[in-house]
Each structure stands twice: as structure tokens, then as C-alpha cells.
Length: 539
Image (cartoon, rainbow, N blue to C red):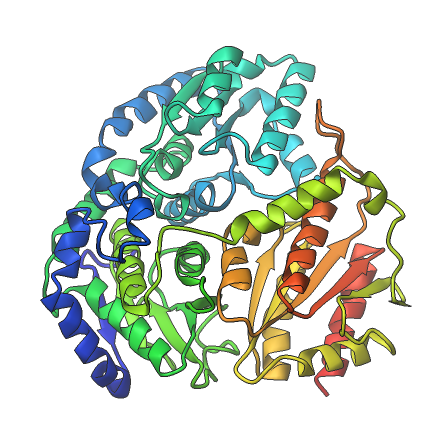
């Protein structure tokens, strides 16, 4: 576990020199203390209405304390009933923080932030007699989590388990989901602070409830945040949040629009995945922002060989090519990165609390679901190579072998651009797909991100449409062997997953970004062929 002190070291002397004036500016503006005091004017008049209802995260180390007793009481009740398996249905901010918390503490939590039928079926195959489902959604209208709730409720009933006693809800006060929970008689409804956006919600009920029910000591997490809070609210050049924000903004001014994240022995598991949403969704808008690139380690392509368009950041001790390093326990790190991201927004000139481009892909997916013909038999591949069907947006070359298609596609990325690999697959059974990220990055020299769909739509999806418009997008979809119906809905999970991929690709294409979609008619065979083609493309 990381040490008790939350800190930031700017390792690179040149970056430290460039960041110094920005540190001075934030200190002179009293930005940190104003942020801690929930001053909504920090980001300008246009941002003030949204900021005024999104700043309660700065005091969650105090205001979330009443949750501790509620969680402990429910945990004791569930354990007494022999219920010790926790499944979380949530997307984005509702799933990323609990996943990091439980992985770091070494306790089991099954996270469903997918529409892949196979992955959901695996979760259903667990012992339902011992299972509690936590459904987390601010409104309840999130299509993925609503689908999970419906599927599990039916499965509980078919297994002879009282579904209402096994469903726990986390939502905002007065939301439609809170009303539904009361109507259905669900076991417990935890109400989160409505003045906190999803990506800043790690220390709200959205982060603490599933982690606490899984067995994490959430009081200790709040204690860690409390220990960092005073320092982060101080208008001083030693404030780690000010230093981190200034480093990011100074690098961005110099052309480093990407932040490459690698763990260097922090003791925190999966932290870059959580930070990815925070940074991308907060800063990626108005054609600017910081693109987070989560990599495997400090030797990984993109970190070890970072060029002038990227800033390597170590989560943990400074190592390798890191220009910045952060330290501290998980609770403190949550608060540090949230403060730093909000302050970086002030320096870059954006509102860190809105997400103006997220809804576009959702609308496109809904439109496709309303027109089932487009999802079944309405598509014709431009090319087929073995078990891979090839589809391209306008202007994307699709002729030749898969390797030739990929070579041309990689070459279409602009200078200092990036490539996003988006896998609408099963992140457990198809986990090897993630190996494509370092392989492509190594062979192309491009900063390369990897995201599981639709999970990334609630994370880096905002940046893809609203940030620097220099990305190219490789979508990977796959045939569904056994689909799952969504009760009382006119679509299956497989259809929903497909609609989400096509909808996002459509929106990206409308933004003028190249999209290449590879559909694996046989997932195992197709992935093997894809790996070989990537190797061929990089020769």
C-alpha cells in the first residue's frame, strides 16, 4: 500500500520550470482554497451554473461518514443470511471506483459494466443463492444497468430467490430510480449526494456502497481522504494538486496533449483506469483537453518512448521515463487527482464538470435499436479476410488483406495523433484482446489507447468527440454465440451491444474521424488473425 502522505513530484526539470508560473498563478488566485470552499466562479461565467451544483465532492471525506453505519448494518444482515457474493451493475463513475477499491483491498466484486451477453451470462452462472445485486445509476435510465437489473430480477425469480430482497439500489434523491426502488420494494436504497458528478463520485455512495458490501473498510478510505484534504485546500506551491495541475497544463501548452499513466508500485490496483475517465471526461471538450493513455508498465510503448506530445506520469515512485510522479494511499489519491483535474480545467480554460458530447453516441444507439433491420442483415462488409469482416467509414481504405488494410489505417493517423482500440467483446473471456494495445503502439509509434465497449463510452468517449480531433478509431466487434433477452424490452443484449458500437462509430464519422470496424465472425479465430495482421502491418 502507498504511504500515508499524498504528494506530487515533478521529476523533469524542464517541465518543472514551465509549470512554475502556473503554480504561482494558482496560488495567487487562491484557487485551491476557493475550490475547497465550493466557489463555482473559478471556471468562468459560462461554467458557473453547472459548477455550482457539482462541487460537493470536495467535502465527501466528511459528508459521507453517515454511510458507514448504513453499509455495516446491511452487510451484517446479508452475511447472516448467507449472502456474500456482490455483483455490481454500474457504468463509468458507478463502477470504476468500486473496482479499484476492491482490487486494491483484495476483496471480490463482480463488476458488470458491459452489454456482452457472454460476460453477463458468466455473472448469472454464479451462486444466486449467495448473491446480492447492487444497481448503481444516478437516474436509473442508464440502458446497460437497467438491462442488468431486469435480467437479474428474472434470474433470481427463476432460481426461487426473492429478487426484491437481493437488489440494492444506489441513486440520487428524488430520481426515477429511487421511485422505482420503492415501488418494487428493493432491499435498500442508498441516496448519493446529487451535487457530485459521476466521475468525481468515488467517495459517495456510488463508490462506497458496493465496496463496503464486498468487505472493504470504507471508513479507512475516508480517513485517508481526510488526511489529504487540508493540504489540498492550501494555497501553497507545495500543494500537490496545484503542482499536478500545473504540470499537466504546462505540458499541454507545449503540445503534450496526452497523459500516459503507469503504475510503479503504488500498491493501488487499476488506478489508471479510474483516472482515465476523470481526466478525459473533465478536460476533453471544445477541441482541447488531455487524453489519458493507461499503459501496462513503465517499459510499455507510449510510456518508455513518449514523444513531445505526451507526458508520462507514474502512479507511485518516480521510475523510468516518468516526468511526474504521485504518491499516497487510495483515499488521498482520489481527492488529489480530483482537485488537480478541476484546477487543470481552470488553467486550460474548460468547464471540468460538463460532458457535452457523451449523449450523442447514446442517441445514435437508441435510433438503431428502434430500427432493428439495421442491426440484423442490414450491413454488408466492404471486405472479408478469413474470420474478419471489414467495415470502414467514408475515406477509409478497406481493400486488400487485413494486414494491408491495417497498415493503411495506421498511416492515416495525423502527426501527434492517437489510435483508439475499442473492443466490444467480453473483457473476461476475450481478455487477450487488450494485448493489441502495446503491440500496435510498439509497431506504429502512435499513442494508443484501449477501451472495452461500451465501458469506455462512459469514460474516454467524451474526449473522442470533444477533445483534440486527431484520433483514428479501430472498433472490434464479435459474433454472439448465445444471446440474452432483456425482459420487457424489444432487444437482446447482443443487439444492444451492436447498436452501441455502430452508434458510436456513426458519431465519430460525423466528426470527420476515420473509423475501421473489424467484426469477428469467430471470436477466437478472428482474434488470432487480427494479431497476425497487426504484426504484418507493422513490418
